[in-house]
Length: 435
Picture (cartoon, rainbow, N blue to C red):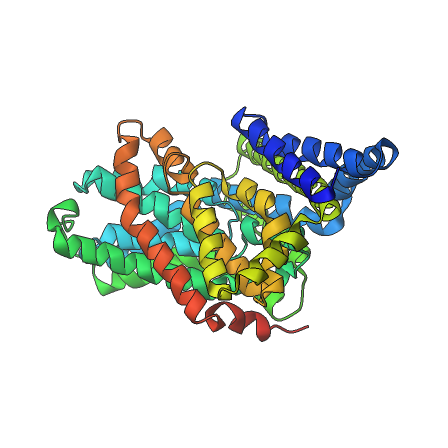
């Protein structure tokens, strides 16, 4: 059989198995194995499966995944979430939509020590939604803020999204992590503007809480952010200035948060074990996905589909930005059905070579990819952040949370467009890195 036809047949098999709800990691592994067997031999395919699985779990730089996940677990269990929110609540609560603004700013701060967007949405849902509801915030407004705000976690380092992208594309994980900083802060600012504009149009959705907060209370409230700043500067600061690599940064951050939690007696044995269990679960899931993606990539390389697609796109004679819009559109549709990491491992074997052949910067494209992964977290019907918030507060209808997240989804797309017109937003900081 012609290699391209074999590749097309393999892709069709992959889609059928996905619709049959087979786990995506096993779908890609099985399809890749069958494809390599068809195009080479069984003697070549079997060792490749074993080697791919072993290399995915034994490669030292991949230890960054459990380290980033457990950082978020320790941070949540140690009460940092609540302290961050309380600190910024004092500063913003008297503004229109102030509790929502405080939530976005606190999530941006928490994102600097957490690598999981879904975990962030769960932590802040428990902390801030009861407070917003106590002051008569509209449920869809409160739920939408938390679900959409948690997408910031996927951009501001440490970020699992950039780690997976770097693993799949063999790009510098350190530069990718730093590249997300300015876009993450820009997205936070856009979300704050959306909240203020929404409340100005409809003040009833977010009444201003009664009472005043003195300047002295605001200053004293800042003591709630020192732990986050400390961990951020010793991890991400050390990474930026070249003192540590990404894996070492994750290790330092995890140990620092563990010491803080134990020293303040905020982490009991049960919570510690739960954090380890969740870390193991998430890490195993991601590593199996990467192993499956690598096996599928070997098959696609043998089928020559990536080069054939690049040749076909080149023959169309359209601008590379037209192709970029097409890719973003595909990601937007896939985000309605797949989680962020699955979407990335499924598409990178074909999309990344195409984008590189068109001359796009790989670090910049990584930021665009992660932005679109973010969009998938709040789009129906499979918006994991929305599901998480709805699971925490079942009395808030899921469709209302999706409606509340819609303006923020538009803001996210606007930031993606801005980064496309001004790629320096994503590439400036990585270009300044030491080493």
